[in-house]
Structure formats: structure tokens, C-alpha cells
Length: 419
Ligand code: HAM
Image 1 (cartoon, helix red, strand yellow):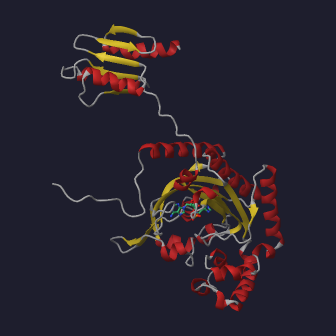
Image 2 (cartoon, rainbow, N blue to C red):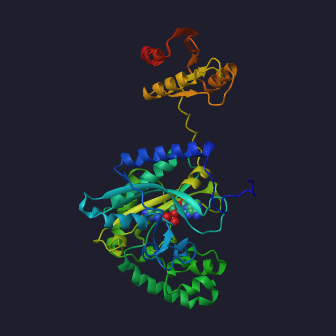
Image 3 (cartoon, rainbow, N blue to C red):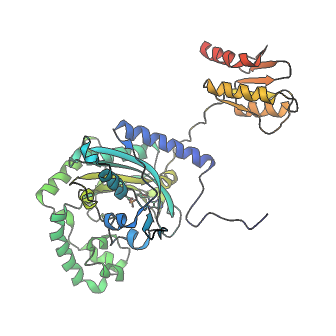
């Protein structure tokens, strides 16, 4: 039965060919950097209770208000495709009693996430993030280490024109006094503000710093800055994070207008941008979330982490693609119509069991076609399986040797050992 073509939904894409191998390389790099620093892999479910994000990410954020893919299951429960990974990791931390483990508990993930955003280059509705979360320590060294690890990953992926913006949002205590000050200021300039900013003066006044509305931007130039109103402990914490980044020569710009699109942040916040990306310039970002685990019903547990967009790293990066693993043995049929397929198939599997990467023609090609395929793969050994005997060719030495087909694997291994 034929029908009209069905396309992938808007804002989604298939990963194949070079893209797939480039991603595999990125994953290998991320694993080596993060596991080398003591992070362990975690994967959480693709969907969670909607309540998790409403409570964790925050009711006033764009993500929760406008961008979640939410649905009801057959039992009437509200579920949501995960728009981010930090709230799920904190949920898992509490659910598995990880506070009993040695601190900080370091977890990393590489997963797909979902946000109903306007799709454009670098902004998708299903996208992938690599992320790292360290739970259980307030130490500024955790903040600095976490930032350095992302910086290293971006450098290894050769992401160009990278800039690091850094700020501190302080603890909720020091922030609440500042919030009032900012609200008073915003109300005094209400007439010049965007509708959306005005509507959020009570709920989330800090987001006004993120507005693209020209009138709002003019007002915000004169607005009081949170960085200038931190209490002494928060200011000291921020100073230590900065001095540790200085020690390892990571350049950054302190940007007191940096606010992130999620409500859970406390103290350190940061964002890496790349000028190579145009409008969607954020490659990765994160910060501290010292109250989130408690909000998820767990014991008071500070946290620090980040996530970076895989697609954005690839768009702005220039890492050379990984070379495919070489094929060592090609099993060819002398006559594709003869009944030697079973012998060849057994040889192929024997070679693979012995750890030799092997291929065989599966397309019914002539011997000439098969040898052409082997040459295109750059294979060193070709075993031509005939009715009466098998011939093993070593394309490097030009040697050609008749043998029983069950002697081939041994001969290939011996030749390898001789190298
Ligand atoms: P986020 O800034 O919302 O933070 O996302 C992190 C990164 O994900 C962005 O810098 C961007 O590269 C990528 N990203 C976000 N939305 C999209 C999209 N629609 N299409 C393509 N890429 C996108 C978080 O998600 C926090 N959970 C980060 C974090 C971890 N904070 C603490 N721990």
C-alpha cells in the first residue's frame, strides 16, 4: 500500500551519517572529561510528573508557562516530557537516598529534552544536552571545577569565539531585600516597560534584565544591580569562585545583568556563549541551586551544575570527525551463486568472536564487485571462500595463501601479532 510521505514534526530532526559519528565523538569526549573528574552517568525517564517541573523550574518561567509538552495518561495523571535535566536529577537524588553517599555526589547525563519553542537554527523542540550536576557541597571549588570542565569540553570540541559570562544571584535571603528594591524601581518606571515585564514585577522582577524590549532595556540600564547588594557571605563565595577561575586562567566577564531562565538558581550563575551562533548564542550554562533538593522533599543539599546544547556545540564547533574503526577482514564468496554462503557466514562470526572487525557482502555482488567493496573499505585481509578451498589474501604484503576456512581467523591473528 502506498501513501503520502510523513515528515518528522517541526523542530525535530533525524541524526544520521556524519552527524551521528560526530555526536558519538562528542559523547566520548564528554565521558572522558566528566568521568575523569569523578562524575557518574545517570539517565532519568523521558517523562515525569508535571508537578516536578512546575515546582522545580518555577511557575513564573517561560519553560513552565509556555514551553512544556504536557499530556494526561490513561489514569488522568498529568505528565510532561522533560524540558531540562536538573529537577529530574534532584528528584532521583531524593528518591534513591543519595544523600547517604560520599559528597559531593557527581552525576552526568547526555539525553534529549523537549521545549515547545519557535523552531529555528540552533533552537529545536527536541534537542540534546550534555549536563553535569554536583550535589552536596557549597565549596566554591565545586563551582569552579564545574565551570572548568565545561570550558574544557568546549575547547576540545573546538567551539569558536567562546565567552564566559559570570554572576552571582546570592542566597534567597540576600535576594529578597534586593527584589523589593528592584520592584520599587520598576514600578516607578512602569510606563516604559514591556507589557510582559510589567506583568511579572511581582512574580519575577529579575527577568526584566533579559527583556529585548528597547524601552525596558533603557530602564534596566539604571536599575539597581543584585551583585552590588549581596550579603558578605555570598560576596565572599563569589570572590572565591572568581579567584579559582583566575588560578587556572579561565577568562570571564562579570555580568551583573545575567539572569537565567530557570527559577532554582542561587549564588553562582554562568553562561558560555559563542559569537559563531548568531541569535541563539548560548552554548551552555548553569549555576548553583542550593534549595532545589529541599524543594523536592529531600534534606537541605546544595547543588551546582550545567547543561550544554549538543546541536549548538556542533554548530559552533570545528572538531575533526572521528575516523571510522578500520575493517580488518572481508569475507568474499568466490561464486555468489554457489552454496558456500553458510561457510562464509560461519567464518564471519568466528572472526567477530575473536575480536576481528569483519564484513561480508550481503548484496549478492560478483567476486569483482566484492573485491571492489573490500578495497573501498581499506581492508587488509580478504578471505575468498570457494567450493573447495578458501584463499586468504594479505593486501599489504601481496601474499595469497590457500587454507581451510577454519584456519583463517588463526592466520589473521598471527599476522597481527607479528606486527
Ligand atoms: P538552559 O540554559 O535552559 O539550562 O539550557 C542549557 C543549554 O541547552 C543551552 O545553553 C542551549 O545550548 C541548550 N538548549 C536549550 N534550549 C534549547 C533548544 N530549544 N534547542 C536547542 N538547544 C537548546 C538548563 O537546561 C539547566 N538545566 C542547566 C543546569 C544544569 N543548571 C544547573 N544544572
